[in-house]
Image (cartoon, rainbow, N blue to C red):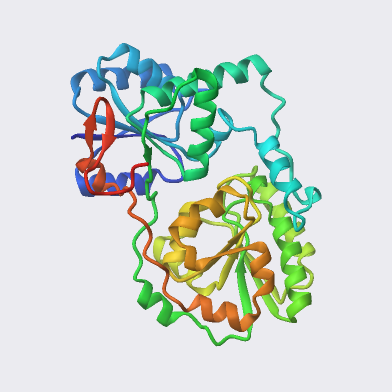
Length: 381
């Protein structure tokens, strides 16, 4: 099956997707984002022409603008597409972040609402939100497969059943994402496990939903309990706002972490080798996000031997519960682990993750009544 990757221009994964696609002989279709519809008219017409000329292709949408594949499925007979969600495309359509956050906060005594910036959901009237959700569910219904973690997919099936009164037949694709392969054994051998301090990664971007202020307070409690020197690290190279916003955020986080032995934030994008080196130096990633954040970066971190800790009701926790259970801690468990225990856990090799769809696997997928499957491989839900 011919694979065509549909990618928004100037996105952070553009180069990585293109590199994988070029290596495998896949095609890439780049488009410009247009508010409301999701794609500009010129790009939509070009995609329409390509889909007419390549009727046997599978179009893989990286970042989902539901109206585009749905419209194309009505215009082009047997238009085959898969949806790879990036986060905002899922939450803004189906799941209210405010409601989900309130649900998690009510069940989590370690979290404080004061450290979470409420996402703005006032910009869309209720009728428009309902229409967007209905259009999104139709696009999912007609898709050959969707890439979501188990908890997100359970929500999606519930919303679909509530709207249409029937079970969703579209399969769940457990796509591995864009992270490269790392030599875990070599990475573990290079990690300094004897350091009498703890290096903690707290964010992958400046997005408000990552909630780094909450993580700093968790680390404050950890340092007070165990008397451990903590080095705080993070990435603030994109999202959240402009450079001035990220400058201010970095200053505020440094001031808040007055107990830490050091605080450093990476402000530029790194090469894969430099990124791997920085991840290798960290012991644990403690994230307070409740929606999925930084999954691509954190899967790389786990492959390098790192430990990850999340709120137990979060989407990230649900993902890593199956991806790397031996490297996963709830926030409560993290606070119960002393330095020696964490260092020991850091040096253990991660469990073998469950089978997940790679770029190469996309070519092996088969279609049955318009839905994707691959015999003998359990990465389709």
